[in-house]
Length: 121
Image 1 (tube, rainbow, N blue to C red):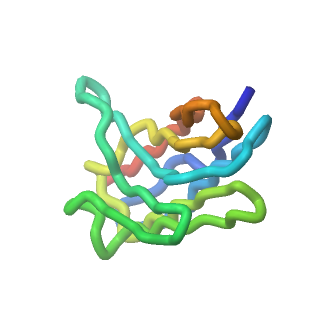
Image 2: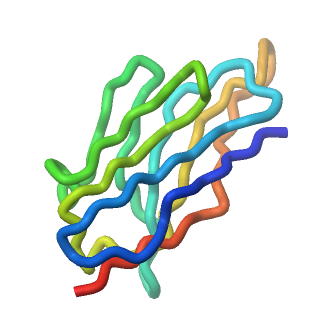
């Protein structure tokens, strides 16, 4: 069993910053890509950013230059530094990890429980 535990959400004024963390634990052989998604009220869940095991990053256009994803492979943890936050960034943020469970076992995607980020204008 693999668990992703998120932390760091909260309420912040527009222009402020928050840092999200997501730690993976359990029967992990290795972790491939990790990422962050978000879901605003009444909208579908969308990709925010991903990072490969080698550190290659991808960002959705709306967060480029404001958000930074990073990971600590030794701690099986991914981070999301969010700067210059806007009201439209308000959403529940979900951590995702593509996890190798071992030889001859298909990798699986796991999700965190979600953490609320609210940006006031």
